[in-house]
Amino acid sequence: DQQVKQNSPSLSVQEGRISILNCDYTNSMFDYFLWYKKYPAEGPTFLISISSIKDKNEDGRFTVFLNKSAKHLSLHIVPSQPGDSAVYFCAASAGSGGSNYKLTFGKGTLLTVNP
Amino acid sequence: DAGVIQSPRHEVTEMGQEVTLRCKPISGHNSLFWYRQTMMRGLELLIYFNNNVPIDDSGMPEDRFSAKMPNASFSTLKIQPSEPRDSAVYFCASSLRQGGGYTFGSGTRLTVV
Image (cartoon, rainbow over all chains, first blue to last red; front, top):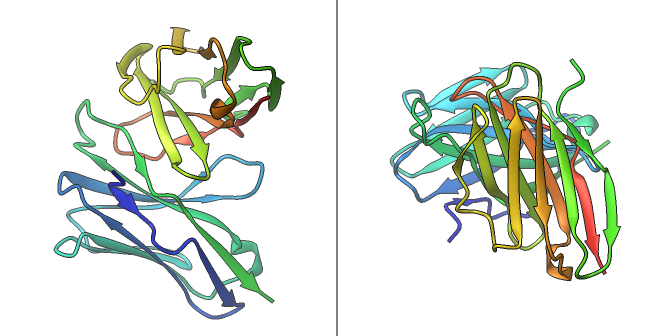
């Protein structure tokens, strides 16, 4: 049972345009959400996060939006650059302030930014 | 800091053999996680430790898998006996504070033939 779903296995975008990666979750207990980026032969690296008390968090070219009622979050990258080409994982945790701290990941979306 | 260090980077072994994967977390981090990545299931949490104590091992697929953390600077994941379906990339990650992001190692690519 996939509690975190990334329904698009891949996305191709032109350099300079906006990339939008989507993620849906089913567990209403999730209260903290993260995006990770992964290059081939490397481990995932933390990109940006958002708490459920917010609906938007921005860090440079990266913005994460959270829609709790729809159980949906998205990552916007603007402008997209060729170096952004990687696999992006959405992750979520429940009760992040307590002992139940573990991240549940989606399967990832391969983003390709074409020059 | 050198980050989370995993060894070996690649492991090829025959079915039935014992495999041991190793992880050195970032110094000072108090949580350690073992994940497995496959095409079919993505990144799955196998087990995690807080302050060297196993907290949740519900993701460990079978009794063939075991993990230990004898001290704050070292953890092992052992598969005995190994099977071809164990072939995957195994990641170790550590974190300092709850609610923050993990730091992942570069992974061990395991191939069981």
